[in-house]
Length: 560
Image (cartoon, rainbow, N blue to C red; front, side, top):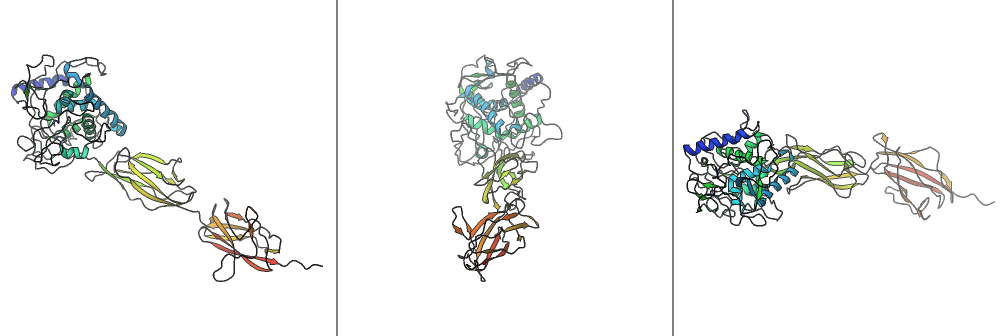
């Protein structure tokens, strides 16, 4: 996956044997349970030994990478603490900005995808193999390389054939793609996975903070748990589909787990091509001659891998060189959250919504994604809430990619509001659901009591009581409007006859009341007024039920 900073190490029986011995020695120094390949029966994304990878299913397009192995003497003795020592061998030193970027990426992903359990040492191992830790840490204060790190043109001549996908925007090549930056992403992969890791508002593959976080997210794709050896192997193979690459990264991973130390930026050890005595550090593919290799690093001679192509986490459409090995399936990544069939959200005040909000998380491949964190939020002027009076709830999708929100209960405020479902911690568009709370209703209302309501002008009527029901049950807290009406086919409010009084004692002939918990209602005092005769009082409930009650005003007795 890494850029080729000079001539590839020549493969031969001697270097292969030495490298094999180094791998064996380091593997032997590891604890048990760390296989280099996935267990039998789970061979997804595993390349066939000795086969030529296709390059269109890996993050770096399977471009060349450094094959140097760490020294056989590890930074710490087996069993000691893996905390960073103050000093150590030159090979165990990691430039300060580069080391900070790896640790920041681990911390960020632990907060958004704790189940992945990404170790920063894995990023360090890949960064070492890909670019020699950003060419020995040659980065500015923001973590951006002083000059671009570019791999060779992926033109199908010894590498994968990947035609230009970015019009040269990232790699300066408008004919073929090249792997770019400290973590050697091909442009089409960066377009999908590129992330702003240092909050400067840019996604730059040549910035170690952006590149490290993007690489971490890519390795965690597909619900991987990198604490499991098989998942870790699959993640590394998805980055570069090569057995040699996996073994090289695994060896550095084990080495860095033994201990590392921080060195100043620009002073990191660069891999040496033992066939030429040159450091591969220019990023242009042109080596420059240096004095005889320093005795301090003394990297162990290692074999060069087969000329693999670099990975791309998303499917691309490059012309793949003829190969008997099938193209590996790209790892899925979250692309959208969608409505999973939620029906109309309507409830009466105080009742639970019968419909539950359901969301589905989908990948860039159109497949459902599990373990995606989804946050449901109630928005608007409402007192509706999820169980426990919560306005915000976060849940994870299941194996089918869906998640259902808790029961939503309407409050007493009527009207419309919104519930939004978002993929937690992402900028993907939210899914919005319109919800409506309707007023409590009654489908029947009747006066209670049978005595005639008669009063002499200037006096008051006996109390008027009524009862409202809904589907045969008491309609509690239902709004009821009482209106003195005229006769006729289309009655209106009567401006004469009996009346109520408002808080200031002024006559009013329309009043709004609310039934109690038993659906019952007692109207305030009604005053007899006007000429003797029969008047009408109409009660109308929320829901349209009505009853008309007659009020008789009698003339006062004649004076004796």
